[in-house]
Image (cartoon, rainbow, N blue to C red; front, side, top):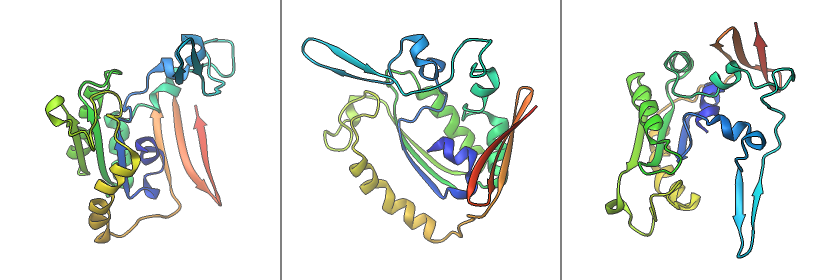
Length: 202
């Protein structure tokens, strides 16, 4: 949801996030090559790993080679990109929950991101769950990734607060475009009729 706010900020009024990664790990993008599962199920005598189908690879000769630019566009706490995003629409309400002890070690990146959001004038709140004293057993159940917060509980708690803030605001939903420089390329996300397109220019 934070990435959607980056590539199409004019369509986003608010984001309610639970443990979303601000800085993508290349091993999740190149899962098969890194041996990293996107998801797995454990059974008494086996473990089944699942991969999301992707064409990205580490083969320099392939048209699907995952270039540095392809990674840069996915980095959310990029101050230059955040400034561009804020110039298009900084009237986005952002709220996130994240465990300081998330096993993916993503809390620091999330803190950096939310500090940047605030400096740029966003209404941004990060609930950083630091230790066991904040586990209530009903909303926050552990300190692992996602903290076992159900979507239903998250929206029941945060959506009314967000809607109250948004009632006083005008929505800026309209056809638009946004461009992000990434290395030697420029990624342009834009509305074209009833479609949303990505154009990559050298």
